Length: 322
Image (tube, rainbow, N blue to C red; front, top):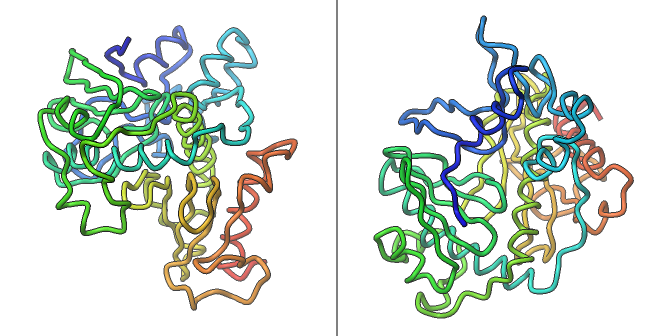
């Protein structure tokens, strides 16, 4: 059953007085400008600590807390804060589920946020993905195969059936006109059944959780210059951020895609803004830049380390350091 959630407050309560929590999920209150109150990488103001964070820029890592309190490991693993689980290969029904949830994101969820504040990006949330909080502390999110709408202190949810029913839960209709401006899969018929397998939907959520957790660690590096926020874009359905490779030049996007028409499996990538602005290197292996498919690191002893090294190498190649 869907519940009202405040991810940061829930996490702070788990710390039992150790400190204040930073998490990867969006949390209220809603913000109306470019400030992100729930940014795990933002500088810690004087007097705000101690802070427990999923990235190494605070007083404690969640991994430190879990090491001292192993009973928190399953809870932290579910939220990609520590005690990290391994990714397996995508389950049966993954491709159809990915397409269906991409349609929900593009035609229903992102437009709900855009109508209030003009913004379209989404974020990873527990069990799936959703909007940041907007308006009067509202959030639309997916929990597995269920769509959830949280309005302040109330919450409602329903299983995904079709785009019409999904939009009706928000008091709206599918926004096909807006989506037509982007390279987004067609709606498939707004009243057509959505092929969503619950196991595959949870897997997709874990892919984004994995991607978010490693992207935020990359973003926290001192060498990550002028880094933007990690956001889940409804057009391409990938979690990504952009940064400069050094103080001078070569901006690129670093991201985690659940798979698409180019590579039909989850993959991580580096995509320079200007494709011709690539130093000569064997690193580049895709038309858009460089890609590392899941199948090439799923058996690695440390999946996170392999992905982080792939992204850092791309940053170094672009900066002429490798």
